[in-house]
Length: 88
Image 1 (tube, rainbow, N blue to C red):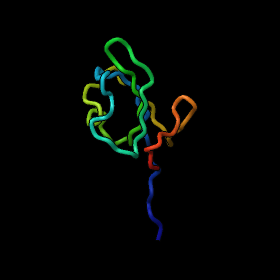
Image 2 (cartoon, rainbow, N blue to C red):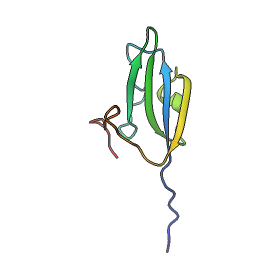
Image 3 (cartoon, rainbow, N blue to C red):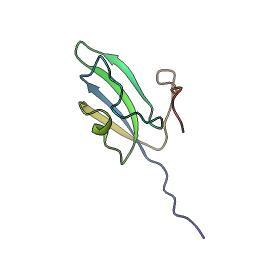
Image 4 (cartoon, rainbow, N blue to C red):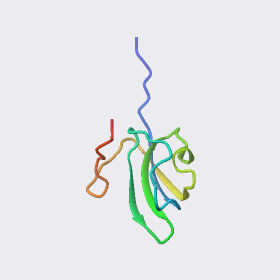
């Protein structure tokens, strides 16, 4: 018997948050990596991966200027290394 398994689809978000003193997600989930990629005078820039069916506002309720790309997998780089907490 074959099982119908769909590949995991991710969204790689880039957005701004006004919570510059504590820009961590409201709900911690070690399966979703995220990074602060910069700060301005009154905002932080966040890059985060979430499953395609997850609501970004559940994790960052003040996110604005949101963009995302659809991804088949999470890609770690020198600029966005695999976080120690991340569980795949």
